[in-house]
Image (cartoon, rainbow, N blue to C red; front, side, top):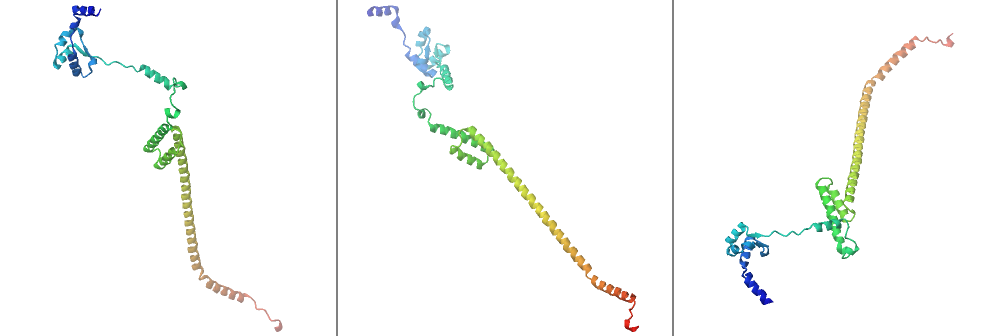
Length: 242
């Protein structure tokens, strides 16, 4: 049977097929791809077999007898569909899990992710002047001490801290304003008291200066009045003279 087949092939001329290994190698070199990506036109075998240089191969490529096969598409549509379902929690039951909880998602990785999120938020707030460097350092150390569970808790804490700080500043400003007002009032009161004291001292001095010659004049006037009163009084007769 085998001999019969070989005879038939010889008669039909199938054993006279042309070897195009050289042309395929040169075409792969020119097209910059692998030999398995080179397509040679089977209808132009004789013309292709005559090409024994890269220049001839370039001419065949230009004529369309040698073509670079397109890249086979490896579709990721099914993979994307599966990943989207996994994000919703499908295909993640106990039967699909391999490895312990710590092996699947280590606590250290979770800690690093949380710290990076919190520190990135603090750095952004500090650069935007929403928090000062003192509050930044305080919150940084608290984040390191596992005070904040997530970013939302940290933001709420920042808002509360800023409100508390503003309230304390308002109270201190009010106290300072009250202290300054009381100080100015006290100074004004002392100034008025000094002026009043000075006026009293100056007024007493003038009154004393005016009242200094008055007693002598009064004494003279009193003596005159006394003399005149004595002159007006009738002399009393002695009882024994009658």
